[in-house]
Image 1 (cartoon, rainbow, N blue to C red):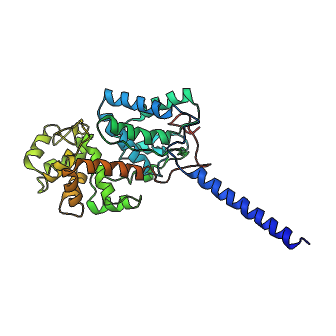
Image 2 (cartoon, rainbow, N blue to C red):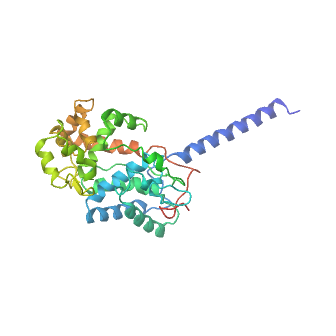
Image 3 (cartoon, rainbow, N blue to C red):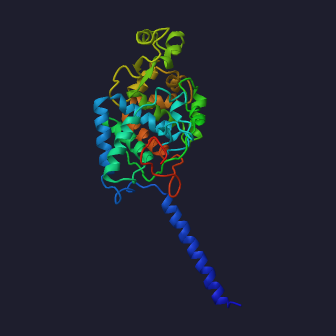
Length: 323
């Protein structure tokens, strides 16, 4: 029979080993801005250059890359599942109604990934590229920058069914607030993130009902102007900037438009429609610095939604397929 001291020593050894395992697991699962400093020092510069070049070729791409990050994080977490193509085991999120023929920027992410695979193969995840690309896209068009925590892994699955439930351009305020709350984001985050629409564009099919139904919450002159790009019949894919005033600049004109009943999408205008978020829209319309700082904070929160870390997921060598 073991003596008390031997038993005590054995118990302590187990305790210390367990504690070290817990600490190790926690460290492994923690995202960090310096995650690639040793394994791929050029990662952030490589991503930044690729995104800057893409935004300079097409300013709209900046908005598309921010939206891509949003649509990724709201389905299964920030795991690059939105990048996966259809296969025998994948029902691609690209084919879900909120993404079909409207989600963009895949080729930009693929190009950046190819460059990274040449300099540090198998190291940088597609999920991290998407997160960093959103930050660099914002900054490229005059928006804020922020520190991106890194270390996400890529999903080996996708969920078209979950993607069908992404926030919709027809959603009312209560539903939008509720949907964001399920992701740990509050009403201020909702309004701040919606401000990215200041550099976005929308297809005619997404705003036709709003500009033709003579609603009380839309400026008549604004509706008339927007009808030029969106006929009552046909032209579903015709594009129109969400902000006509400064469509190529990341600024607070989006919020000024809402106060004037000039929000293009119904889901934009509900943010200023006599509801609980009116005061936030009013604040951002008067204080562009506050908008930008809140936008950066909301993007950081969003990027923390259910990341895969440690032994979960994989590093996809090609972003649109499971290795």
